[in-house]
Length: 133
Image (cartoon, rainbow, N blue to C red):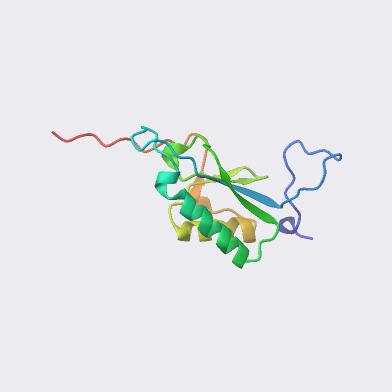
């Protein structure tokens, strides 16, 4: 058995914990804020469509041990759409279907990471453009 064949072990897991119900659980922020909200929202950035696409592709790929769900605000609005994969707790910011395909293949199928799409602690939102005089 290789490390990728074993289910991930959650942080602080004990021998008394039941086995994981899903090998991986993906949360896609679909939170909606008013259009003029300064932080924006993932829904306005296409997260619902991306979530629907990811669910469809996961089913096509036969990923029966993966669950893809909606999430409310994940507090990374400015960097969204936001996606987090548990139990690893790896965060992504996919913008396109191709990005979702990369996350599906690299993380959920192969057990690696879609490194270029990862969000890390300390990532800053884009700076607002300065108005030109």
